Image (tube, rainbow, N blue to C red; front, top):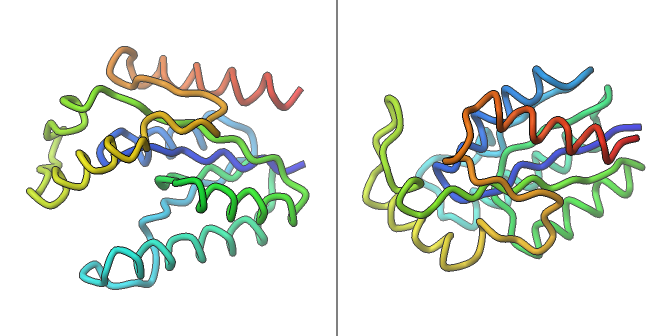
Length: 163
């Protein structure tokens, strides 16, 4: 049975980094970054969100293997939409929410320098609760554990649920 592992969280919380690593730690797993879609980067936010969700729905419908790991922020409506897509596929749908403290999410990491617009959107996303979704199966503060520790915590939760 396919399990969709959706990694939720605000911008700069580590969704893509964890998603890629987690897909390598799970058997027969495939990773998609929800930000990789057909909408232009300068398209309105609503257009980009719709393009991302449409692509994720398509990938859920086509998925083979044991796990589809997805990295993309979710609100309540988006969660319902993707949960329904997983239900149509006969797949489990798990949500892992990443919740570093706001000041950590606002900091530049590695080679990534956040724009003013990204920093403003991060603050909005915390105000909107992206770091504390009630539909989350697991919430992790990515600032208190190493990447290997975070991967292992997520992997253990996923495998325990799938028993």
